[in-house]
Length: 138
Image (cartoon, rainbow, N blue to C red; front, top):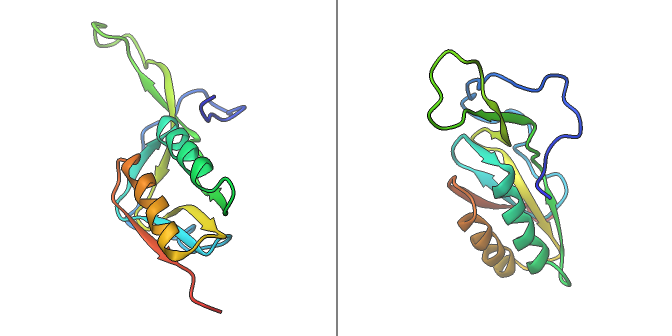
């Protein structure tokens, strides 16, 4: 089952514009390693499901993962060959509006090499360039 909000106040939203850099959600909160975006992008529910499968397989016995983003924004699409002026299309899927610098995923309980290997697989599922970050040793 793909991620979608249980209820929304309004069925459809405007597309909106991106801020330049992340003000919130740009630091590690849970794990020792994180995956940070370098550009702003819309991450769809299908991208997140593919990433969730990779993280679940790779961290089954050795670690723990956190997904820090959720697709709240409905994305509408009109059917093909529909003329202009018939209104906004139906909700096709949901997206998460991710700003540059946002930490999307976190890992803990793995070594640095394993984290880099896992995040390399995760990055191949995403449409946005990313960077692996690590918490300073305390």
